[in-house]
Image 1 (spheres, one colour):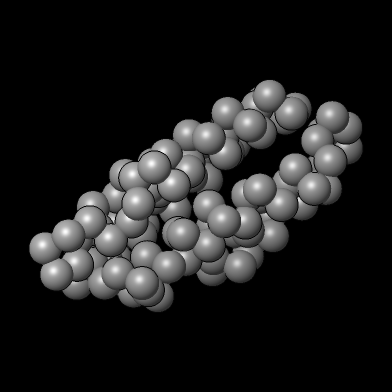
Image 2: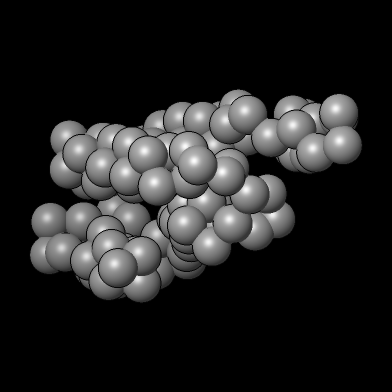
Length: 102
């Protein structure tokens, strides 16, 4: 499902002339993080995994659908989702797993 979502969201559209293929590649780390939730890697959310994955994937998709299809819209989307992904609760052995300054 994640691979289908990544493909659909990064598929070039005719109206996206300002967005290069290279800039679209910036979406992959975001969807990589989302698929990591599903895979339980590198952090396992336990019983909350399915709920967190569904929420984050749904919100990312809805947000993408409302994103302006130009370079500024892509940058705003990428920045927002990197911040959101980084902010997910990830505690392992009593310490934060992800580096917030990432």
